[in-house]
Structures are given as structure tokens and as C-alpha cells.
Length: 592
Image (cartoon, rainbow, N blue to C red):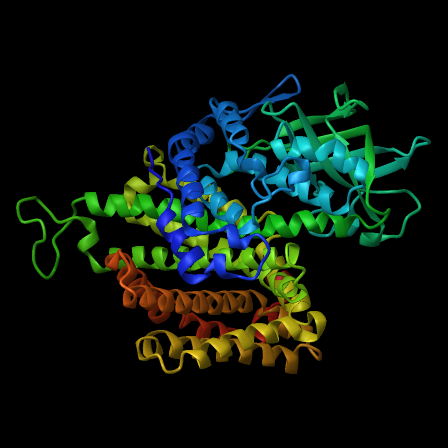
């Protein structure tokens, strides 16, 4: 069975050595001292290792089953879910007014990584519930908040998001689900939704569906979409549960991965629903949930890579194959361990340098969310909006790639189910697709986010890189290995942006054909910046006599690898972007 141990030391390093969270001018961050966060992360890590991880294979092999309209989750899932919610983990960063603990989002994100790595499918149930909580908290009426939020915070009730229909995925303007107004102010919801994660299950008393639908007579396209609360069971005035609503699970999808999560076809047959926010403004409310989910999905990408990497390292240290070309390292055995071979080292260093850089990127992004939601920083909001498609798209593309690399370390055993490596790859694969497929993330980045607010936020990012380079130009230990590569990569990113400015207006395809390359180019620069900051923090820790010299030296060596072996990909992506649309659009449709 695969292993998993929470990387609490790495999380501690990012939070305190690199980000210095307890010193940030963000409300609540003064409470995030090292002892406090370490205690929480250690406990979260124990749950991940001892409770969630052992059920990961169980969820994969047993899956979910629909029986007489009820979905049965895998053996042990309900007990584990109860333990997580009873421990208060589901409300860690939620509003204390509704039973939450009011902790910063960055701490909940760090805890979330450990639980996603241990069991991604199980973690989706509380994860989606948190998204529903956030949407209602931001856009619901006071009555809706008091009715639903306490139960969502505690996960006595769980939540979903219902967007996709059989004929309508990314293009929500084609949506057909109807919401007929009723005399009592409610609506009758009729339609079918597909790919609804956690749409039906046996782990909570009620399921609160957030459903996109159109009110007849409203504007055409996406401007006519509204958002509705549609509970599985009606809620009485005293908060008790009433009759079953007119909705049902028609089918569980047979999927490539995340078998432990029930992905449902949901049928709404005149179900009672309640409008959230204003009529025809549903996308704005739903995007509160989706933007949070996209950060979470980016985390899923590297969290699965982390779990796969840990197992690949253990296998490479144990498996004896061949001899070190420079001389036997295990002379008393029949062969040397795999880890002596340079190509295995390359493979593992690719994974390690990615996951550690990605972790820093997501945790930094979480501080931007806190700066906005807790401190009212609109610039931070603009910057995380710019970064969201990069976090979601780049980290899930590279995360899946890393799980494949981990599988490769095992050779043929990686292809055999008993070793468990294929599950990491199969589970990671969905993260590239749901919450907006990665090609759409790239189009959003190039077509919308770059120009947002007159390009203010991308210019702020460039200034951030420039300031870091200038502030540290006298640091000889950083210059050659970190500052110079980061400077060149940033120039590549600026050159790509300039190409879009010069060519995108007269030929939009010139920009869109290079959008995925731009997203990856941007992602590499972001991880390059993270690694430069981590190297600086590690060097400072060594200078100050940090207790674990080996840890900090390893961090610096891993960063050097990323800067030398991964960051130069920016020049390749720039070349592709500058080739324009012609190579991409050359063939007539019928020639494919």
C-alpha cells in the first residue's frame, strides 16, 4: 500500500522562513506564530497519515454505488468524514458567527494540502461544501446565511455546485435548466445537471445544491443566469428537516479516477429552490465558489504529485537494479539501489523541485486572498485574480506530469495496480479538466486577465520581480544560481506579453494560439520567483545558525536544480508564442 507523510517541515519553512506570515500586516496573522501553526499541521498530518491515506486505495477499488436513489460511499469514508468534521477541521477558516474558527485562509490551505495528498476523493466532500459556504456567505440573504451556514461549516450538511449540463460545459450561455417563479417567492427548478461531484451520498444529513438556472423572460446567454439554493431535504422554520425535495441522482458516472467521490447526474423535477443574490446575476455569485475551487484544484495538482513523489523516493531507495557506473554503492548486494542512477535522480529532482515550488506558489496566493478578504487589499485581489488561471492550469498540468514521472520510477511495477501508483496519476488527471479545462484557463489568462484594469496587475507582478532582483543584487550567493536565471525568465515573459500587444489586436489567433505556452511560461517564472525567495530564506537561516543545516542546504540545492533545469523552458515557450498562429491554423478542418 502506498505511504504518505505530511511534509510539515516544508510547510513550516514556507509559512515562516519564506513568507514570514506572523510578521505580515494582515488581520489575524499575528496569531500565526511557529509553535501554533506547527501544532495544527502536526495534528492535521496525523489524521492524513493514519485516517485518510489508508482509505485512499479503498475508495479507488470500491468506488461509490447507487442503491435505490442513495449513493453508498466506500467502506470507512463516513467514519473518517465524521472524525474530520467533529475535530473542527471543516470550519477552520470559516466565520465564527456561524461556528467556524476564523483562522486565516493560508493556514486552512496548508492543512488542506495534507488531506488532499492523503485522500483527494474523500477531501472533495468537505472541499465542495466550503465552496458552497463561501458563495452563500458572500451573496446570500441574512436568512439564508442563518439557515444554511452553521450546518455547512460543521459539515452536518454538505454542499455542491451544479453548472454543467449534457449539452453545456464551458459555454454556460447554452444552459437550459429553468427556474419558474412561485407565489411564495421560491422557484421551481427543472433540468438535468451532469458531472456533479458529491451530488448524492450517505455521509451527511442534507445536501445543499447550488444550481445555475434561467428564469423565463430573462436576458439571453450568460446575462440571464441566476443562482439558486436547492436543498435535498426541505428545511423547516425551526431548522429541522422536512420532506424530500423533487430532485434525484439518476446515475453515478464511471470515471478514470477519484472513484471515492460520487460524481452524479442530478435530475431536478420542479424542485423548490431559493434565489441567491440578484436575479440574472448568478455567474457573479457562482464565481465566488469557482475561483476558490480553482485555487483548490491547483493545490490538488501538486498535492497528488507530492504523494506520488514520496512513494517514488521510497521505491528508488529500496529497489536494487544495476550498478552505479562510478563504482558499486552496495557491494555486498546483488545490485545498487535505483537512486544511484543519474536518470532516476533527474526524474526525482524534477518532481521534488516542482512540488516544493508549487507549494510556495499556492501558499503565497493564499496570503493574497487573506490580504483581500481580511485586510481589504484590492491590489492583492487583482493579483490573485491574475494568478488564478496560472495556479489552476500550470500546477495541474505539471502535477499530472509529475505523477507520471513517479510511476516511471517503478518501471513495470508502476503499471501494476497493487503498487498504487496509477491511482495518483488517474486522480490527478481530472484536475486538468474540471473547474474550467486548462485550455480555457490559458484563454482566460491571455484574453482577459492580462488586460484587466488596464494591465495593472501584470505590471505589478513584473515590478515585484524587478524589486526582488534589485534588492538582492549584492547577494553573491544568490546572483548566478537564482537572480540571473530569474531575470532572463522574466524578460521572456515580458517579451511574450509584448508580442501579444503588438499582434493580438490585428490577429487574435496570434495570441490565443500561444495561450497555453504563455500560461506555462508564466508558471515557470512564478516558481522561479518562489525558488529565489526560498533560497534567500534558506541562506538566511544558515547564516543565523538554523538548527537543521541539512534541510536548508537541501532546499538550496533543490532550488538550483529548478533554476538550471526547469526555468530555461521559458525560452522554448517564448519561441513557440512568437511563431504565431500560422503553424497552428495551417490545416483546413477537413485535413485533420
